[in-house]
Amino acid sequence: MKMDADLTPDAGDGLTPFGRRPSAGDFAFASLRQAIISLALPPGSPLSRPQLAERLGLSQTPVREALTRLQDEGLVAVVPSASTRVAHIDLDHARQAQFLRLSLEVEMVRRLAGNPPSELPARAAAHLAEQSALIGQEGFAQADDAFHATLYELADIGGLWPLVRSRSGHLDRLRRLNLPSPGKMEAVVAEHGRIAEAIQAGDAAAAEQALRQHFSGTFSRIPEVRAQHPDYFA
Image 1 (cartoon, helix red, strand yellow):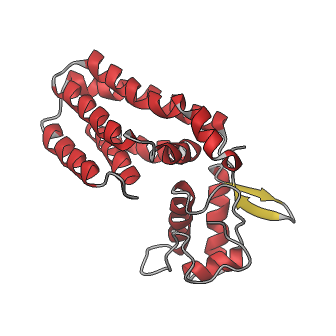
Image 2 (cartoon, rainbow, N blue to C red):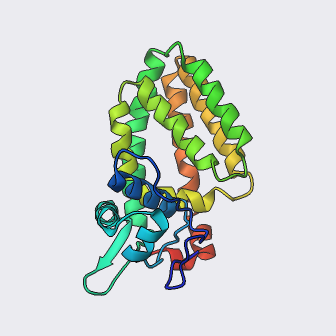
């Protein structure tokens, strides 16, 4: 769905009006970022501050601040005195985010396997149950992220998760395009299970192997995904 001059307050763009939140700017940023990552606002969509402010129930100031933050993350492209649009997916940025995540998470799972947390089995089981229940639904991607966020927390590097998220916008959109592939969501759940099992068994090599396999799937399908959505890519 692309935003244009005909945008109305009930448009199906994934945005919700501002309610009771600690910061209007943070609310605008989180709402717009989620709409971009989920592809409710596809690459190339025009972003009008007045229209976005109306949709979110805010003044234009926090919306402008949010767009600046999204530009810093590479998710919004601004042409001075011309237009502001959702940035197209940049595969170089996606590969860099993949490298960052894999580098961090290989060390993370090896650390966890060296001293498996006692709470891992219960928390992993809860995540896997949630993911299984969400197969085929919009919430699956968030449940996928929640599993990884828990591993960061258990490895005592939870403070790095927001940094990883801020660098992963292009990668996350690429993953979203690949998730509907037949069997992909089921494969993600199974891969998470193998990662958790290897950590709990104290097998660092198996945990690393399972993680590397988990991260390889999306990039192996770039040609097919790009052919299906040529207008989404830079």
